[in-house]
Picture 1 (cartoon, rainbow over the protein chains, first blue to last red):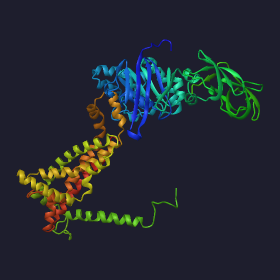
Picture 2 (picture 1 turned 90 degrees about the horizontal axis):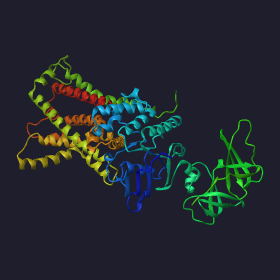
Picture 3 (picture 1 turned 180 degrees about the horizontal axis):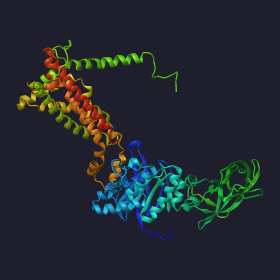
Length: 364
Length: 266
């Protein structure tokens, strides 16, 4: 994002969080460091148990790190209780106060900050307008729908104008259509308020569509930080490539590493150009990944050759599973047209063309 | 939809249920009816009359015992509810740790230890204190009632707390509320129905107690139940029925109120 200033809103420095003690010790976070820029929509992505929620809770102050520091614009906030941090959270369960109206919920943070009544009233009205909930200001939170509760939770967390907004899988309880709507809504809110968002999700599609940058986490570690494009097209490790989208893994011998590029000699004997993950150490058998939509099936000889094993129709596209002559499996995704089938049948001998700039060499 | 198999319908269930209800309610119905007896017998009907209610109302001993019962009940209910609320907060707003189950058991001790044991223990304990301090007021009864009412107040409060989402308090803290403000603005209002339920339950339990009161009371400190027990020893008149009926009405009223309070806001 070219117009984003490079100031860091949050710096997580060597943070570890260990639960339990003695033999039953579990490291939920293992020396994690990451910087989150001002005004950024930053996503922590990973499967359940990867430590993403723990990291969010440490930033919010619901838990304290075992080691390391958390800097908010340069000040260490790690030892502060949650009510002393200018950071607000949107909870997965929304956690709206059931004994208060929508307006009282939204005004709660400002009230606790001791703002004058007139200011609270004006700000609440502004927030209600921002999330399009003006008509329901006087309702109890039990009397509104899940999507509306979600909007109130957002408005409540945004009302005190936090330096950073934390969102803990806030869309997971919504149905598919509403979730899509709220994804766009969240992007709009982030843009309009200019507040730094830290969003936690296990949904890779959600992460790719909404984020400026994504940190992929697994087993208490951050494996890769980058733009959605980086994460999808240039995964650094097998876990990242596998977790996000579908991909083909090929074994290759790597030569001529330099300038982030290399030559990869596949088992079929063909040599292709590939980009190389940062931190790659030369070795005999490296792993090369190619996305199914970046390869093409042909009836002629290609970079790889094999036999069609299975054809799966998906509406917008067709996945063709090929057993390579080398013994590896490879999937090609082919865009569908309305008038014709995919042009291949089970048992066909086929070649696979790997496009220019389609292969990435992993570091593990 | 008709079903040939239902565990709700088995031979004998209806008869058993009917027997239980008869045993439970028939004696009470008979008691209430004879409260309105014009004759001074509790078994022979001599026409309708309200005179026993009137005589109970004019009996200064009855009024004295009733007022004492209310006084002890009110103070014990308020005190035990305060303690029970604190205990419930301490035992639910924390992660589970070794010894927590033991604390539950310790708080609920009066539910498990036979009342007669507690009564005897308190009698001996308080008599020592009486010798040392010379104080022989109503304080002993209040203390005893407060102690055995705590678990009754504790149960509904704890049930309410356990159903309360901890994230609400976390959300309040996130929105700059200090722990005290979080308690006052979030926890307490949401807990209120549980506290009221606990308060009323404690009051009813205190009002009803005989065994411990009998052991702990000094001369002239009869509560309504111990007064009634004393009267029955000397022979029963329908006056006892009248007092029991009034007592019954009061209990029903409190339980009904309790029901509506605990349903409100849910």
